[in-house]
Image 1: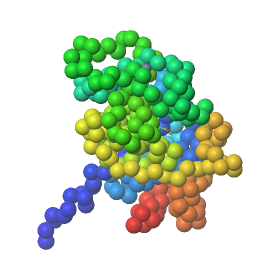
Image 2: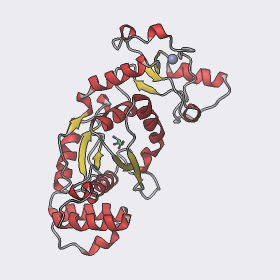
Image 3: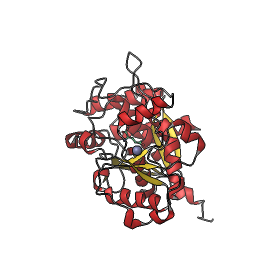
Amino acid sequence: MSTLQPATFFGSSYRGRFAPSPTGPLHLGSLATALGSWLDARAHQGKWLLRIEDVDGPRSLPRATTTILHQLSACGLQWDEELIYQSQRTSYYETALLQLFQAGLAYTCTCSRQQIMSALAAQGSHSERHEELIYPRICRPIQIPHSLANSEFFNLASPVAWRLALQAEELKQSVGDFVLRRADGFFNYQMAVVVDDAAQNITHIVRGADLASNTARQVYLQGVLGYPTPHYLHLPLVLDQRGEKLSKQTLATAIATENPQLTLQALQAAANHLGLANLSNHHHLTIAEWLHAATHAWREQKI
Ligand code: GLU
Ligand code: ZN
């Protein structure tokens, strides 16, 4: 009898991840994302990696990271491989920015928000207060000169923003030349997430639907940086009574993991949200048993 089987039976090459921003403890919404991505990875016999997205220095709370790690461990959502922190990966983002600059795809911008709004108003395009502004390309060179496409002009010391010189028509209409690195030196989420998903060889991204509108930008960046594009699955958001996304702003309460019973309740609530309602009569299970049952349920639901 042959023992040869297709490679997938020995464990697949699936690599998923959970990438929380440490702005507060996990609430029901972020637990649902963590659980959904964990279940999808386990159902595929894949790996599940964890990345702390503290790229936005001033908005990240070190205490939140400690709490999130503690909550995940209590829930039995154990991650594989090394945990990475975006705050320690600036040099990788700089290398990617240099690559875009050398390809003539990145330029510096000194516009203030006020200048951008005035330019947009002068063009007759109005923008709502909270909408992302579509940059009117004031600082974009007609063509990024070839002589400039040289690393000696690549100066990260000056406090200017770096923008992507978009070539794609559709993105030009919807988001415009978006910022890659801010004037304060912090890299923007799109850049960091794309560099890190590639660095961690992520094949499957399972995340909240609130991030779906970023996907086109991320796929575009993957293309110009020569990275592969992973599969994307966006999970429905957990909404509060007013129909708003749960977040720190809407005072979503932290999930309680003080004891296994509370932890199971939190996991069950997250699973209900993911449509795995059949698990509700499994309250006598340990967390490990519950996760095992949930993995089966996830696999069946997805087929
Ligand atoms: N750090 C992002 C957040 O917590 C998630 C990034 C992603 O999954 O692509 O909203
Ligand atoms: Zn500018």
